[in-house]
Length: 587
Ligand code: GLY
Image (cartoon, rainbow, N blue to C red):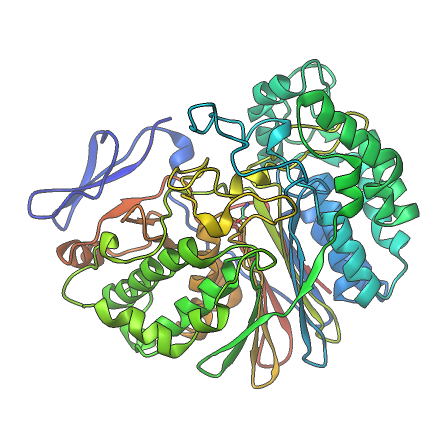
């Protein structure tokens, strides 16, 4: 695919990779190279936030946001609406919405108590640390990403059942019904959803030979405006509606899923499914200036990393320096470098490894970590100790935020891992299975599908949950609900959430402006900062270059945020990302 690159000349060190195309403009001493690919337009949006007084749902798809608002209007609370949105997304946004995947929920109730639920997938009982290696001990390409062996035991249905059992108000059946209706009546495809399904035809045929799920009935390509009907999925949802979590983890659906795994050489059995359990965990709660940050603990790396990132820049006057100014960017990049090194070294499933969360987010530790920082010169990532991490994860995860009339607030990030997960569709069930096993470290020191290099803390073990970057987060200000935030984006999740929070609390942006704002990302290794076109002024790029930073324009946009801000008058602003089909709806 043709790409868009930025190339700095002469006195500046190179900021590009790949082949540059023809120069299209000269500006302040550097040339920018653009391709003729019409899809490679720079992202820009001045979308306005959605304001409402009684409740707000921000999600990746208009139909899912509508389902959530309808539940709120019927008297459901934020957890009820979140459960309904999760199931609706499994129907309308099959690349990431799911019942065959997992995720995390952060919940702050109206009284200020907070909870987190880990419904991340688990490694099947028959999994083992070398399961993706050949006889020579090398990873077999594609084994942990495509096909049956790539799946962990799904957690989403158990997670929703656990959330509803503890905090739900409306009957369970009412929360599943909208998803059933969408599956039975059909979902009108957006241009993005249609393109996504067209793009996976080949790989779907590979792992589901002869399968017809998600193919247009006449065999042609999907177009925007086409309707996708999912009758088998509707039947699965009806069983979940009738029997709760057992409708998925026991009986017919469990047998279907296990036979599908057997057919394709996967490991998940009915025993694995029966044994799956989501887990309530103590939230990470920390302060950043006068804000309280409530975020996801391990098995996510996101909460630890976010607290570290915020605290590392806390001493600096970034409001005065300005948004994406060179000094602001420099301290943020240097924080990211150190935090991602820690992520690789220390983070894993806390049920299996001891993760020193309190130490990692302590000011004392972070001060020590910052000692090697200098404004004069970029730190060399090779000198920042830790494990190793590189490359990118898929954008195909999804996040949604909900606030109800009492200001109960839910942040959920959920995923199949890669877009459409393992591409395996359960025969008879019509839903995609995750390829979350790839989030484990397949072999120490060897990058996985998204360039992540593993370590012992995140090695595969039966029953273990794979490390995640998902960062659903809620902020309080003066003891009151302030912001609900999250995004997909693999390893860029953490930095996109970080920037969005700082955009509001330090740079005075509205929720939507913070979401719209162009973003950048550094993750220790590879030692470069990627950025959306226009994120930095030319002068800023030059200054950073001169201090030894490698900058690379990102071909893809960063983040698909879905966030909610409580405004000073108590009204809610939904901010949903114009980079996707994301929509906020309130009432
Ligand atoms: N699968 C992406 C994540 O959990 O971070």
